[in-house]
Image (cartoon, rainbow, N blue to C red; front, top):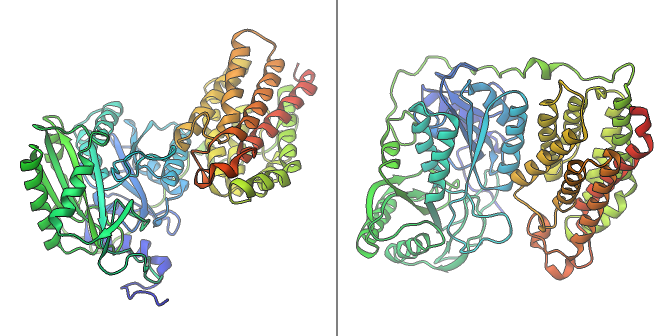
Length: 591
């Protein structure tokens, strides 16, 4: 299949070359000198570490221009982190963005509800917190296409996210603190709904066109990555299309709009729809909202705000507004795509801003101490036993995963376990428990691909932050219990799963609960650890009877999952149990 003609050089360079053109066009923007991995657009007037307001960062996959870099500027975003086309940006890129613009008042991450974005922005947030930054995150899921979303994925983040950028940006520009800016952003995210309609499928750079949509057909309720919509139908007049979309958005399950409410309307082109057609849709939408629904349309925004490459179609977003939100929407901004005119002279030469260095304490190379303390020996024994347990069950994990996933869980975990054993012999500062846990997460993320590597690093980073808070006193069983609670909570928060969803959490959650119970009751710490390990094993075994609601298993027929445990949960039970046994056998060395 021949590729579609496009004005590009190399399909692999489209994002970086787009950013270069963007900063040449708008004098208020700059980018970090980190291509190709770090693709971050920042405000040219913000110096690293000195910004005196709450910084706002957003981003995601590219291909949605002008989102997200087009909304960087005073009154909106402080930085935008750009991934490859339709791919989440890396954790390193997000961290670079946070380090570049965040000052004493902290930063807010505004993230669209996609698993990759949640995980990578979440891990970056935990790492930034570990480095001393104040970081909060708001997830936006404004998609109203699916009446009742399946599983834990929830509603997708669509063009309504731009309203969150604007309101939060105005709040930050007004000098509000981090909690106040987050509260306003979260409120807008709860009051906005969006639905899209496509007349064609987008074409990725360097690839051929899709023939999914035949002549005379349209898709209702699609996302912004070319994925299929909720329904396919014959193309209808724009009046009918607008009517269908508004009916879905204004249903009680989406946003709380009723007769007499005031709203802001956004008619958003998906990339290949002429402005004439968007203006027609906007006019019809205003008329229907006011006449059919008795809703006052306070503001109308029409244009291309969040596209899907060259997709023909549109989305409509409805935001319920009041006397608090409207001034935020009207507040001045120099973000080029809100839209505003280009102002100020273009500099004759554009020089990229150097990447910010990592904190000094992160630049030092970790190494094994020449002599281990008692607790250091015990920690080494636990880590070694856990890694070896994973290596032993590699084939079993792969076998289970071949039935409920993509068949590589054992191989992925085996890679991580071997890397841990290698680094254990030379890299881990075992006498410093918190630092060792931090390094452990870094090892796993370096070699383990996919979701597992990110989740385990999030687990480790959250535990590290909690343990570091107690670094000036001996680590007690309560410290370990607190760290496990924090780690499990972080995995649930950023991964989106919880108990009963057939994931690694079904082993971690009961283990954390039992450990907390035993420690609070004053029981022997080693026996409490062993009891927690038994709870992890029981929890993992119980996944045989669960219906998957997260991960790849959620797409598989429940009949095929019967009597097959979740491999991720079984892996947790294996390393947790082996570590507990090792502590039980070697506890004497720590005394």
